[in-house]
Length: 70
Image 1 (cartoon, helix red, strand yellow):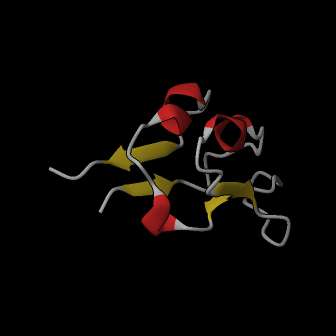
Image 2 (image 1 turned 180 degrees about the horizontal axis):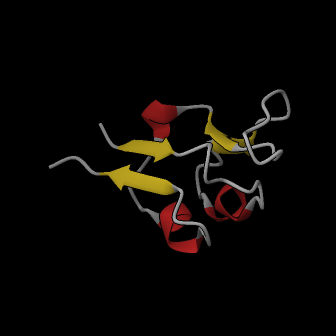
């Protein structure tokens, strides 16, 4: 299974990853606030990730890591 890891401490909550995700499995977490005062992105359906890594490519803060199936 592909896995997306978002480092909440580095995320500024810009939403570019959520907009880029073709499966729409990334959202901004309105209930969480990171140490910078932003609402970080979170993955709501990790099993639906295709491993395309578009989210990681558009992240300006390099806060996303995508691990693909072999």
